[in-house]
Length: 81
Image 1 (cartoon, rainbow, N blue to C red):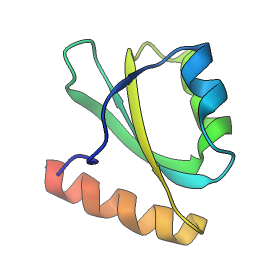
Image 2 (cartoon, one colour):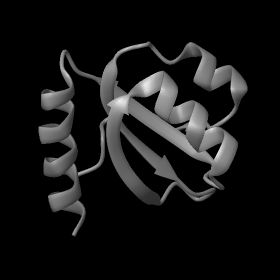
Image 3 (cartoon, rainbow, N blue to C red):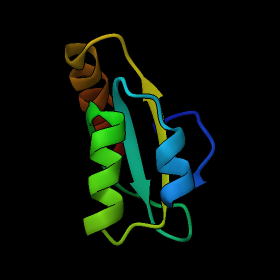
Image 4 (cartoon, rainbow, N blue to C red):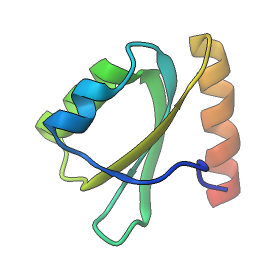
C-alpha cells in the first residue's frame, strides 16, 4: 500500500519544503508508479535523490525516530511486492 499522500514534483522547491526530520519517502516515475521506497533524514535523502537520481515525483511522511521510519518503510515494501 503506497503512502496516502499526493505526489509532488521532485525539484528544488519541493525538497526545500521537506521537514528536517526522519521519515519514509517514495520516489516515482512520471506516471506515478512507485520506483522505490526508503527512509532516513528526509531533507538529506531527497537532496541526494534530486542530485543523483532520475525520478520525477516524491511523497513522504514523517516519523518521530529513524527506527519508526525503518519499520514503516519495511511495511510499505512488503505491500508492494
